Length: 141
Image (cartoon, rainbow, N blue to C red; front, side, top):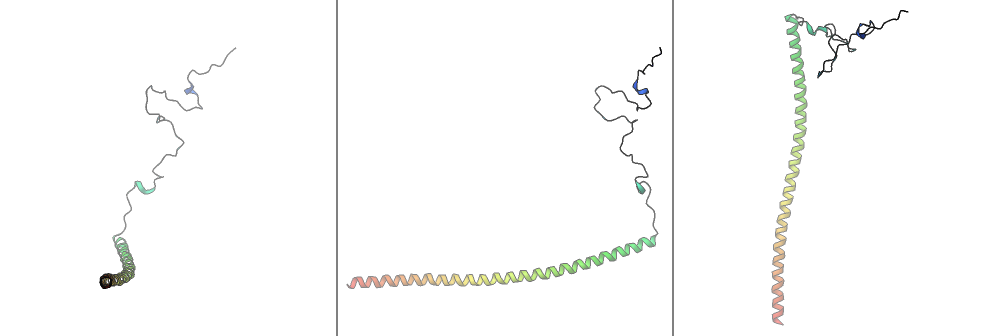
C-alpha cells in the first residue's frame, strides 16, 4: 500500500504564505518585509499631485489674483476698523458715564465727611456746654 507522505516543511504548502523562522532574542515583533498586510499600501496615485511640481500660472493671472486678494484684505480691514471704532465709541461712553458717577459719589462722600466733622464738633461743643451748665447748677445749690 502506498501511503501519502506529508511534507516535512509546512512552508511548501501552496495555500499558506511562507513563514520566516524566528530569531532568538529578537526585540522587534513586526512581520518580515515579504509578507503583505491587510492595510492598504500608499502609492503615488493615492497621494494625488503632492509628488509632482506645482503647475505654473501665468503672471497676469497671478497679479490679478494678488490684487483681488489685496482688495479683499483692505475691505475686511475697513470693516474691522469700522466695527472697532463703533465698539470704542460705545465703550468710551460707558467709561465716561462711570467716571461721572464716580465723581458724583466722590462729591457726595466729601459732603458727608464734612457733615460728620461738623456734627462731631457740634456734639463736642454741646457736651462742654452741658458740663458747664451742670457745674454751675451744682455749685449754686
